[in-house]
Length: 153
Image (cartoon, rainbow, N blue to C red):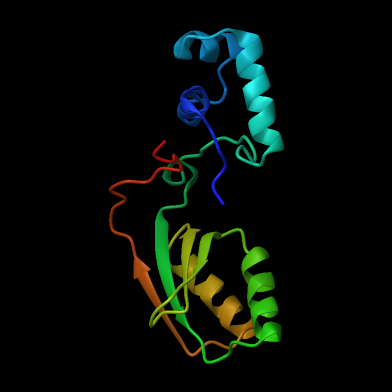
């Protein structure tokens, strides 16, 4: 169920999505409010689970992680034990930036960020040694056209 937020909350969230490192004074000025009401709203949105954490965005390529693979996985296993092993394998690997269970022909899609194709192969070999999968298709992203963690508020 979606949380109930008003227009002021949306302005605060949009401002935080742009740059959460700014001071409360800067955010309040930007949205046309004062510091205390902004702080109270942010605190309430944290308590409600709307704001889950604050972090920084890193440039993967600047840090040498030049290859981004989208990995499509089909499995013939769907029992709870397999799912637990699969989740543990994904959680243990920092290369996996995203993992989604899908409806349709593909069971899972992973976004995997690594330094190069050899590093992807190391990841792949480790994954299939831990969990049985039916098929794996790896798609190398040639160019990131758009990527944003921001929600369309």
